[in-house]
Each structure stands twice: as C-alpha cells, then as structure tokens.
Image (tube, rainbow, N blue to C red; front, side, top):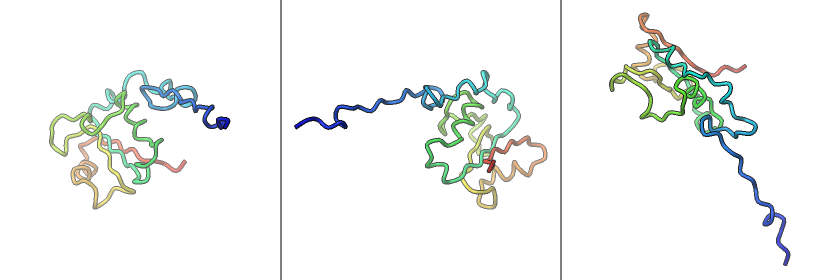
Length: 127
C-alpha cells in the first residue's frame, strides 16, 4: 500500500512574531508600531477600551494591538499598570459590552462624568 499524499506532505507551520504574535512573513505589524510605547504620552489619562463580546472569541481581535501600541507588549490583567489597588485608579480598563451604560463599572461611569479627569475612550468604528 502506497502512502497517501497527506502522509508525505507535512504542513509547514508559519513563523510567528514574538512581539505582535502575527505570522512574521506576511502579517507582522511591528514596523507600524511606535518605537516608544504611547503610555508615556498618556501619563495623566485613563484609557477605557470598549470591547464587543464577540471579539473575545476572535483570534485577530484589536485589544492586543492597543496594548502593543500603548505599553509595548501584550498584557494580562495582573500586568495592567495602576498606581494603587483601588478600583478607581487605573491606567487602562477594558469593558466587554456593546455600550457603556447602567451595567458598566461604577468607577468608569464616575470617571466619564468627572470634568477634572482626562479619559480616552477607545471603541471600534464601522469604517
């Protein structure tokens, strides 16, 4: 019995970029990222990211790109920079939902209504 073509042809794995986690050959975005993380420019700002619930399941979601541009690396929840452990003191917070409203975090709603706070709201745009 001859081996099938599936047995003799092995799939080549694409080389993945260590920084952006995209395939190096055709999709690496590291050249487009800032040399210095943008978080140095936003030292007095709070960044709130509104992430659609369906985006959590997508491999090519946009939140890791925001993290790379702001902090120069992918972050997990324990790595998010903050000055203290209080819930109202954060640099970047992600809200998973379709809109900001009554069900949102109280600290976020308070910040958005405070005229003394500088808040950058990041959300997807249809275009």
